[in-house]
Image (cartoon, rainbow, N blue to C red):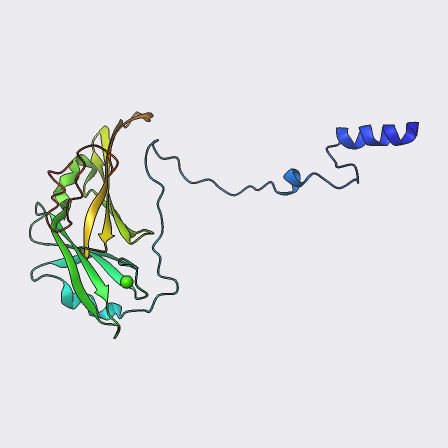
Length: 219
Ligand SMILES: [Ca+2]
């Protein structure tokens, strides 16, 4: 009996279970690298969701770009809740870096073609709108729940970040503003951001349609 007690004490001191196996927490330890630190209050980057959707023909995208504009970025995913892939396009005027970028929602059709379902002519900030940091456009993402996100970043020592989300309204069959986040921070002290977040839960928040939203004013 005395020997058993001593064995148990030794196992505990060695960090093992009573049956001699190592503790599970020890075997699950990993050394995966961590992502670079971002200022507090910045959203995590979600991914586009295209798995399981009927595919469209990406080659058809350029024909829907408004005349005089070129495609800055595009992302594929589901933007309206059906089972067909859609495309979100950011388009810009290459001859006017002060002009707002346009945001197009291209709905995938049953025959794999695309149709312009919505257009925001002033929904994305211009190339010159980022201050000393240059072009403020970071990325466009398709999220869950038929919504998409536009991310911008700019400033000089004082940095700012803007996150704008639109979500599909099944009744109006249009995309409406559901989140507008504006964060600033001292580039020399990223732990103290100042955040201005607007969501539908806030008094006075208006779900502005993509078609009339002006990113340079509505914040
Ligand atoms: Ca769809």
